[in-house]
Length: 295
Image (cartoon, rainbow, N blue to C red; front, side, top):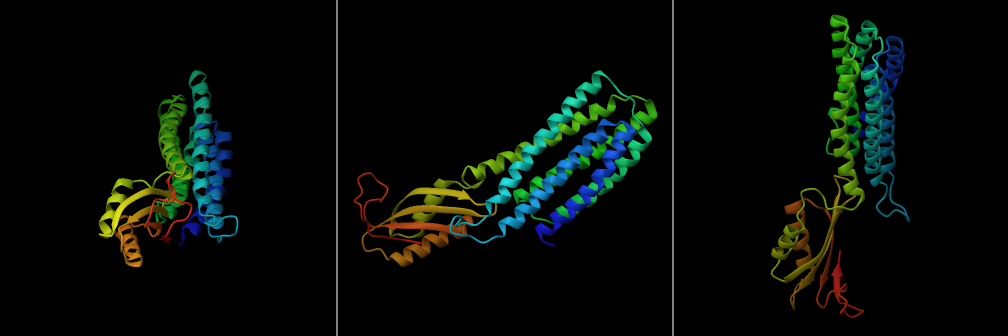
């Protein structure tokens, strides 16, 4: 099953149970259930966005988008992270209000709906578990579901406490606990996706090490500069650099060695290398025309 198919089935299960949880939350008066239902609504929307991200990213490149639509799935992950923040803020406001002014909660229906919700969330998380968790789109969707699963678990605990003791403040208190867990995960997704959208260097890639590896690839390379690295997605790093050559260098052999060094050491397949036999073309003192080779 592909990443896109896993997200699609997860979306159907989440959206279907969300309706039942809204009804259960309204009937029981449980904030934990309503918060979880609201989170499931955002989950369904997040999964839909993730699914669209995969569909759109599969489109080929065109005249206006030479790299295609791969970045759309990163944008989807960023939006999903922001929605998690919004949901968490709404739950916090409601929870604080209910702690100060507790309301009656029907623990029996709350427990039943929360138990079914937990089962559904476990199934959905199992579907997503087989996908590529390094993919930010999948990671963002999975975090939505994981937060939802924690919300269902908190609702079950709250229902049991209310059944045994009648202490209703446990409902909003546990909701706040779930919010803290959601926020931590959401911030990580936002940070990583924003880093890619801002053309940040791939995580774990040291540009000084790239310079050193390319310089050592061939004795004909005297200097490596203007190194730039970024990612289309978390799985698609890209690199460009300039390599200054010594007189008499074999351009084709030097280029092949440099590319192989980048691939073997850093696993980057898409690399553009400009070989220079004179002053750097980007230097202020460089002449307007330069002999060199790029790939």
